[in-house]
Amino acid sequence: MRPLIVALALALTVPALPASAAPAESGQGVSDSRHRVRDLRDLAHKNGIRIGSAVDVAALRSESDYRHVLNREFTHLTAENAMKWESVEPERGVFTWDDADAVVANARRHGQKVRGHTLIWHNQLPAWLTEGVADGSIGPAELRTILRDHIRVQVGRYKGKIRAWDVANEIVDDEGNLRQSIWLEHLGPGYIADAFRWARQADPHAKLYLNDYNIEWNRAKIDRYLALVKELKAQRVPIDGMGFQGHLGIQYDYPGDWANVMRSFADLGLEIAVTEMDVRMVLPVTPEKLATQAEYYSRALADCLSVKSCREFTVWGFTDRHSWVPGWFEGEGAACILDEDLRPKPAYHALLATRRR
Ligand code: G3I
Image 1: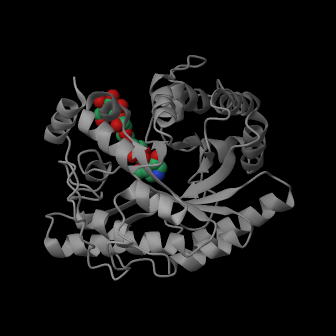
Image 2: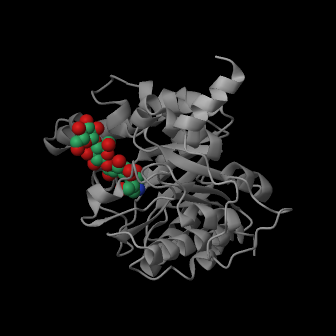
Image 3: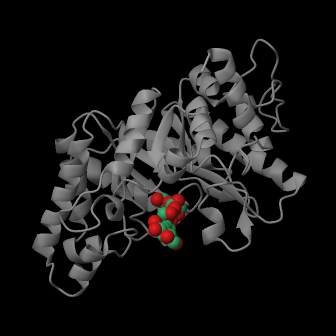
């Protein structure tokens, strides 16, 4: 096809953003012609940060409009499910890398960085592992070897291609205790330090993160993580970053102390990242709810921009067409910055209008 025809075909199939992306009522900044931010890539570039999205690999493969918007807007990718243990090692010793590779290959083609998600979690573990531990056929020593090998194989495969790994995901519960999991129960708390050390050995340049939800506001959880980071650092465990998932809902107050919490981790020498941002609402959608949602997204980005070491702002999916929220919270949804037809919502415009405080 000639270029003009290609452009016309794209214009017909891929939602374009309005030429005058009006700022939402976020109060975060003014958009004049000199400072107008064109899209999220431009926003990322102008602020010296990475703006990312979780990637649904099925959509990446089969939906050209999804692919187009993902690559037009984002400078950073996280595989939503494709790098989790049950995805990459569904049977013991049998690795399936196709989906994870697809994310990494897409990132290379489009100049995007990648966050690896995740090496240790209590969810989405393969049945052979959880059942083997439960029936005693996998004992503690073998479990430790399995974990070590899993980290070595996966981190080693993507050595040099993954900017940061969520090494340990959601390992503290809402009461501020280390979360009960097969890892804690069978390996003891030392599994955390081991995992970070094994990851560092497998890729010395990847940044290694803890990652969790509710640490935007839950004091017990925040304090436990601060103590944990201090303990790990005192033991010279290679830990580089704290990931704030940022799963918010407009029916709850915005976590107004979030920037200070980020700073308390930054003060320990860590990078900060917002890793899974979304803002859900009780349906139906109304203009007022969308305005509140826009304000939450904008405040979250402004909080990140106010902390020098917060250099990644990743949304957990960019379109309501593919979001985990409706499947998990009955009656809730519309959590993303674009709607199901990939039209930008007020939240998208509010992000573009957000300025560093
Ligand atoms: O792949 C199967 C498919 O074969 C089957 O037909 C279908 C039927 O339900 O399920 C599919 O698996 C689903 C999988 O997502 C892939 O779509 C699982 O049921 C579903 O439970 C799983 O949900 C994921 C969830 O993690 C699991 O805990 C969400 O997509 C994913 O967005 C979510 O992501 C987590 C982060 O990793 C960590 N932080 C919280 C965040 C939201 O829960």
